[in-house]
Length: 158
Length: 158
DNA sequence: TTGACTTGGACGCCATGGCATATAGTCTGA
DNA sequence: TCAGACTATATGCCATGGCGTCCAAGTCAA
Image 1: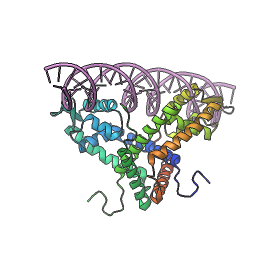
Image 2 (image 1 turned 90 degrees about the horizontal axis):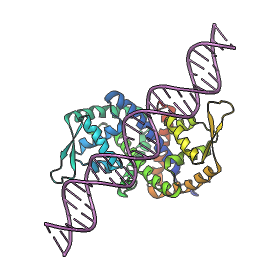
Image 3 (image 1 turned 90 degrees about the vertical axis):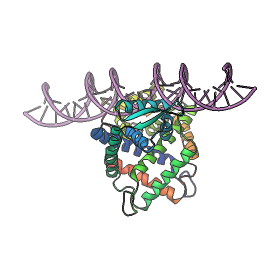
Image 4 (image 1 turned 180 degrees about the vertical axis):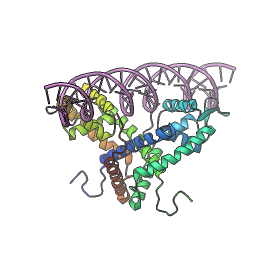
């Protein structure tokens, strides 16, 4: 007789703990691999991949995608720009903002890093997501993400 | 045709992105709520809950549980100690280390925060994990976590 | 036009984590 | 029993993120 009387309940705190622990460990392991092979970390890889797939995005678009603050995003873009992987182009239709684009070097980097990323992730999860349960889990998480985004849950103020 | 030829494959990069996005948003939202009601953040709640459930743990035990560095853990415990929620008692069988314990105030705090935590999590996930798919997802994530822990994946060096 | 309000984003301060190093305590084998 | 290796943790430096603040630019209305 745990918290729920009929068997249908989920242990939400336990689920959250598992979620955070998986995220931490996968993130750490991916960081190690990406750093050693491409001299970037996972957050940078994710920025670069987003910018490749959404050319002309603004800083605010990147911030919204990753649910982090605008200031932090601006600083992250600064670092990518300093490395020559991203450029800020003036936005012709709104001079307050810039449009972000990958350079050729950035595009090359993200392509190479993407291979490392996928390969490492496959090693790390090693079949844990195969089979019908795995597919269901992936789908559930995707739906939870969509629900959180629809509800604007957990956006930082900055 | 996508990456896998037969339909059995999972989009691992997509799964990872969903995992990180869910974690970020839930973490942010829980931070907001815990901060306003109890003046702590989620990481502190998790430390306190772990110490309540593992009285006499050492700094290294906490670090291993959360897959973070020992230095960071030591500093986190410093902050909890400074607030009067945790004490370091000398370890009688090894004077290099301390045994960590909650104070009465710490125990009271973690109890109150636990109610807020569970309630907020229930609001935020609002049924997204109900039903057989939800249960399967929770189980899969728990197994992935176990596998990562068994493999010592993603432990920081520090 | 002009003045009030909004929006995009850069910047500074502070908190926190990683990582390298320092230090004290413990153990092991001549 | 003592030197050297190992272990637990503390501490300092640096990178990064949150959050508040500032300012340029845009919008709107009269």
